[in-house]
Image 1 (cartoon, rainbow, N blue to C red):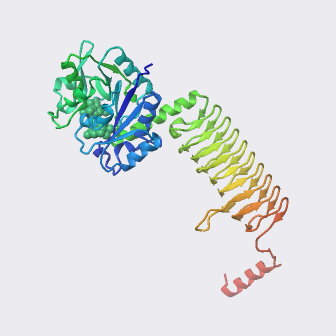
Image 2 (image 1 turned 90 degrees about the vertical axis):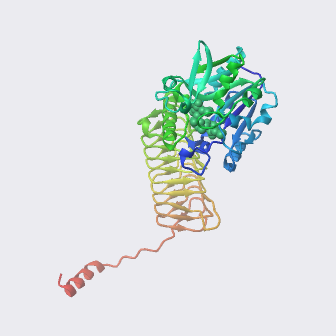
Image 3 (image 1 turned 45 degrees about the vertical axis):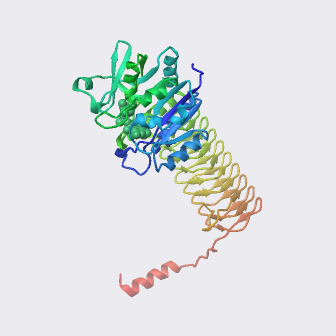
Length: 449
Ligand code: UD1
Ligand code: MG
């Protein structure tokens, strides 16, 4: 494990024209996290001392996202996108600060493992001046090819510049390079743009180093760890790889997924062992599910904490700020937002519960709505423990229902209800004897039907 000071430079200025988007390419999300967020996470886990991100013009969205992840990250502007070698030099200020080692990563290569980064640094420690991460993709297509002589990497040839023979090489450039800080600027400054794309290729650096008699090595990574994303199709493919890995991970941790391929996780979903997840469940960001909870089919869950033995769904929607107590139940077509559902409480059918605090053991009848919004502000509903709210009631917030109180079904509740009281707020029923039969007789006589 390497401890010496090192700098990570993440290149993210490329437009990604094949994405057809107004957003920077690296801001497109995988499992709810921008691609660059995955890379920032990896360099942080690999204990990098300083992060520098190279952004393009009009990428305020990207710069502020990077700052929100890592306040001290250096943001460098690459005014013109003249290639990956040119992009690295946009971080000249950081390079001039004499880092021991430099790792360059591409913001569009999101699955790099922290252990791969540290393995590359270890090769530098072993005496190499430059280390390139290689891989053998199933379809080498447009990737740069690694040209090896004995143990040394002598050049990288971009696919567009490669000869037919070179295109036959199965070993490709993954897009991560490490080099010592000592010669970094002098090597980078020697890169020119004499190639088909008239770009300054970072990938020319190994050849320049070799010419100077410096040792250049490569190590191998798995294809799935280093896939580069240049189009929406590749983005969808990356999402599917992320999801299948996450599903495997949660199953290995003791979670039952009845139909794994239909469950979608966020990058940060936390699921304890002995949770069961039925088919077609979607997790947005910031969800944790504790042991023995059951998430039934077709539920959509984000920003929620679900305690032990709770049962959610089928067809439930939990929105941010939801806290579900132990053994509580949220059933079909119920939506919960910014609310606490106490232990053992039930919201089983067709309800909207927003900005509410529901006590333990309360029963919220079918079709209950908390009317939390008056077009301007949001107001709170408080329901005491073991309260019983009859079906199809509207609870107009701010409102408080005491412990053990009853609400007659169909009520529109606008005043607080004391503990153990019954509140009925609906039109009184009156029965008119024989009305229906005389109505029918009159109708028959008039129409002859
Ligand atoms: C690059 C490599 C190729 C490698 C592949 C792996 C070069 C010349 N080629 O090709 O050998 O097999 O990645 O995925 O490096 N960027 C900038 N400024 C620029 C140009 C690019 O910041 O002027 C950034 C992009 O935002 C992107 C990364 O650098 O994050 C890679 O650029 P991209 O254009 O995708 O390079 P590839 O053609 O994929
Ligand atoms: Mg790319």
